[in-house]
Picture (spheres, rainbow, N blue to C red):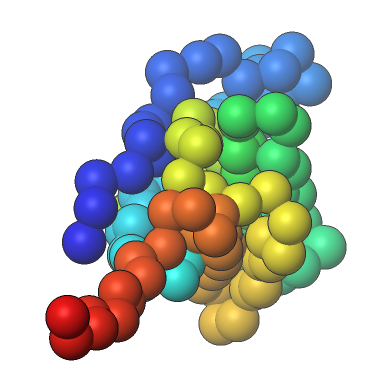
Length: 131
């Protein structure tokens, strides 16, 4: 497999994501690669498709959204390990990634972003002819 230009971009979240009452966090992701695509998988417990936004603008892929508090009425937090608030993650997408056909799905609190490889970046088998 080839190494692609897909790297975490250090950046500041937009002002609307950094209000004092809304802490931000960076979700952990796994990046998987096949011959035809790249998948970014982020664990985001409590997130559904309405609370996450994925955008691709030129060479920047942005994952942004909000995880609401999950505390039932009448309970106090004794120990909190799950992140709550706005989440933010950006990646620089290289020329090996196609811009058409990018898809994002959320299932059971797991976000999967599928980025198809550009045709020129895919492996091609070259037929060998006899002389």
